[in-house]
Amino acid sequence: MAKSKRGLGRGLGAILGEVGESYENSLHADNDSLLVLELNIENIKPNPYQPRKNFDESALQELSDSIKEHGLLQPVVVCEDRYGEYILIAGERRLRASKLAGMESIRAILADIKFDKMRELALIENIQREELNPIELALSYQELLNEYNITHEELSQKIKKSRVQITNTLRLLNLEKFVQDYIMEGKLTQGHAKILITLSPDEQRIATDSIIGQKLTVRESEMLIRNIKTQNSIDEDRHPKMINKSHVDRELLHSVLTELLKQNFKANLRNNRLYVEFNQNVEIVDFLKKIQFKA
Image 1 (spheres, helix red, strand yellow):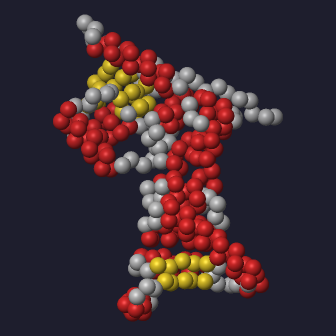
Image 2 (cartoon, rainbow, N blue to C red; image 1 turned 60 degrees about the vertical axis):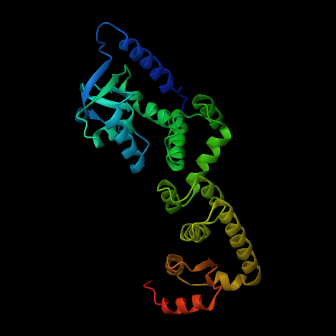
Image 3 (spheres, rainbow, N blue to C red; image 1 turned 135 degrees about the vertical axis):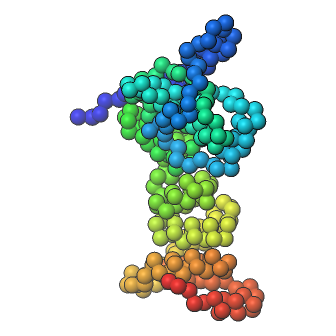
């Protein structure tokens, strides 16, 4: 039986809009509102469904310094679970930065939200606020599509992102795991990722090592990938039998390539052939001195 479609909730924007309005009202009220609380930081638990895994340490430090100087300008948002404990809904960067600043308590808005909506709200918050890296964003899209059994077009309408952007972002999940890890670490941009998708797993490894080792721009990477594809096509036409019968250890070749790139040599790998480019005699001499690599 096909999985029935479930509708996405009102979304974080609508909920936070109402909460924000109540907060503004409380600032001008004669009596204290129970909606805005001063909570011990240690009593606020993180959202277990938070899709964001990576936080920029330097940006957190800047926010922490700002909080020390000016205080927290915008409260975090929490809800209460069935055990009476406070769970963070929005504002993880503010919470982390406040901890870094040595704050013992933090202002928090208590929202009337059911705990079973936490995953959806966490996903939508980060998508709408554009706080996820490309892989985290793709995983969030995929989770919403699977959870609610909706199409790319329907998701587009719900989260106000273009269908093309959603589809292209989801394609990043077809990349090899090591490429995805580099994207999450910020060593590759989404621009690099888009052109790497067209490559085979082996070609992705070759191109990625070259891009990172030589710090290539997206445009330079496009030229590299065109060269890889062209050369592979020529080699396959000239030596189809030799390529098919090769028993060369590709991982060993990749390790040698990585070492060469670390040593700042211009090198690439094509169909079990390792190419090193020299522009001056001194480079050849330097290469011969460093040729003993630990494979």
